[in-house]
Structure formats: structure tokens, C-alpha cells
Length: 117
Length: 107
Image (cartoon, rainbow over all chains, first blue to last red; front, side, top):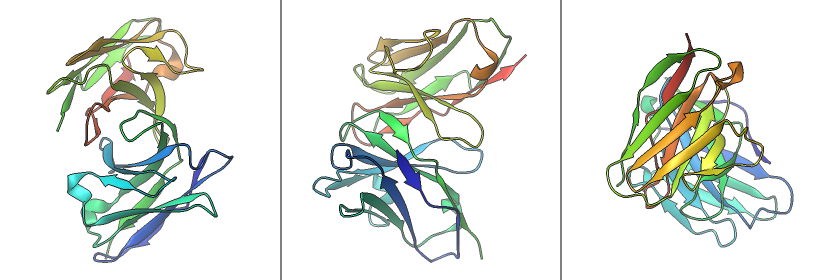
């Protein structure tokens, strides 16, 4: 299972760091993808992290602004997004995949991030 | 980057109908295509992967077909719990991408 934190409210220009905790013994076996969904909009892939070694790949749009990390001691992956603007208001999902290029077979419940002054 | 175009963007159907949703890729995606179902306020749920493989636990009324640039999701004998939004996703190359979604509504 993937468990995400509750909703966050941030001001423009701030950063948000969203945790995604994996339960069970599969933390280092599955890649974690991050996908976001703006209100009433479709799904947007942000990037992926390999929890085993910590290597990452980001969508061009988020390079330099998104940082995905992991803490193997707590089986938690984090996605930090900086320089927040109103357009970043969205539900952020973490999801498990078998590889860098993969479908996503299990999803967290999502974290709503609201960016507002 | 591979862009995915779903059609229609929305449709109205009745319980028991057969529904077909298409997903067209801007360049070849081989068979690296998945379909998801999303209900309001919920995370997406994987239905089909590798274009035609049914995820464990998904009813057999759902099926997928296609390869390359043209893909189809078919729902036979539409059930009340199937009214939702459906997305396709390609994983043939970076960046991974999703179609714009198809909203299946009750007629």
C-alpha cells in the first residue's frame, strides 16, 4: 500500500514536500511515479524515482523545480515542488510501477495541495 | 514526446450497453499502453496494461486491444459502477503521458 499525507495549503513562492509511505517489504522493488491532477483536469506525469538506488527521471516541465527523494529507513518517498504558483494547485498522487517505463498498478490516495495567497 | 488523443471526450450510455473508447498515439507506442478508471474524489485504478492484459480483479467485461498508434478500450454490458472517467497512458518512452480522459455518463 501507498499512504500519502493530508492536504496542504501553501503561499505562492513556497515549497511543499509530500510523503508517500510504502507498507510491506516491497519498498525497494517497485519504482514510484508521481502524477498530479489539477481541479477538473486530466492526469499529468511528473517523474519517477527508483527507491532502491534513489535515481530519478523527471518530466521536462518539472526539471529544476521538482525533487524526488527516498528514505529507506522509513520506506518513504518524498516529492518536493518548489517556487509554487497557483497553477500548481492539484491533487498529487504517488503510484507504483515495475520499471522506469511502466504502467502504475497501485496508487496512493492523493494529497491536495492548494497554492493561494 | 508521445501525445495521446482520446475520443470521445464524453459519452452517454445505458446500463447493458457496449462502450468503446479509442486512444490514438502521435507516434508508435508498441503495446506499452494502459487504461485506468477514475471515479470522483478517488485515485485512478488500473484496468488494462500492455494494451490487452486484464489486471487481476478487474471484471472480464473490460477488454483492451491495439498496438502501435491505435488502441481501444471496450466495456461490454455496462454496469452502474462503470460510470466514471477513463484514461489511457503510454509507457513506451519518456515522458510518460496520459490521454485527456473520457467521461462515461448515464443516459
